[in-house]
Each structure stands twice: as structure tokens, then as C-alpha cells.
Picture 1: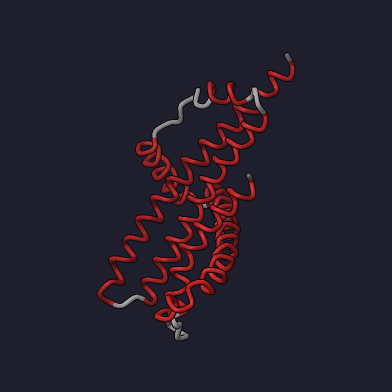
Picture 2: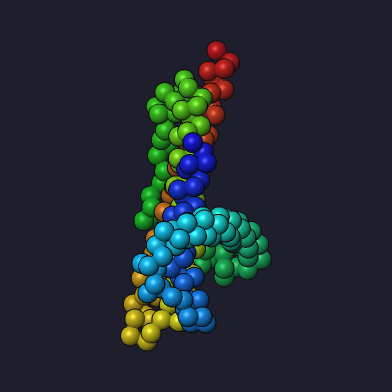
Length: 199
């Protein structure tokens, strides 16, 4: 089950990433995309493993970049006062848009799922999978925007870039929200399982 979930999430990220990777590659080498139809069986056999590996790379890179951004944020917040002020303004705006999390979220569902550890694990895997997909979407949108600015024809360069920028910001919001929800579920589920084992 876990492998199937990972396969799907990596394929999603990898297939999306293959769009901007192909756009970059086409500026340096002539890809025979017009002949894909003639060799579609071979293309599928080669493409999906490449997309899967690319998805793993996107997930690992996005995880590293988010962790590194958090470390830099903490360092800058301690050392640069203007950064701390700007950061607090953005956090306030985020709270206005995203709201405060419900304090009792997942209480009932975690209580029910704690009766079956495999169901709890499967649910947790599904929540973590959503986090990874949102994280990968953010990195793919950022890379797509940079690719558009660097390689897209002038007439579509800025519409694609702005679309990717909106998707990047939205994906970061979704990642933050989904990460918060999955962390909350893990805390509540562990608490329920511990309580159950003590009874």
C-alpha cells in the first residue's frame, strides 16, 4: 500500500516536472516529439520510469529547500530586525487568510481509527502523501516560472510566469495547511493509541 501511494505521488510530481524539463531540453537539443505517436509503446515504457525518478528528485529537493528555508528564516529572524518585522506582517496576513486551526480537529476520527492500527497508519500515509504532492507542486510551479522567463516565447512568457507564480504561492499555502493537518492528526492519533494501550 505504502509503495503504491509513493508510486502515484512521485509519478504526479515527475510528470509535471517533465513539462518544464522538456521545455528546457528543447532549447539545447532537438527532441523528436512529433514521432512519439509512432513509438508510443516504447515511449510509455521509458517515460514512466523516468517520470518516477524525476518525482523522487522533486520530492527530495522540495523537502530540502523547505527545511533549509525554515533554518534561514529562524536565523534571519534572530539577527535582522527589519526581517523579523516583515516576517510578522506576513504571518499576520497568513493567519487572516488561513485562520486558526480547530483545536479539536481529528479527535473523533483518530479515536475511531485508533481501534485499528493498520487503518491509522494508512490514514496517516494518505495525509503525508497530500503534503508531498503539495510540496512537489510548489517546486514544480517555481521551476516552471523560471523556465518560462528563461525560455518561453515573448508573447506567452509573462502569462505563464504569472500563472506559475500564483500556483507556487497557492501550493505553499496548501502545503502549510496540509502539513498542519497531518501533524495534528499524528499527535491526536498517537495520544489516542497511548491512552488505549494504558487502559
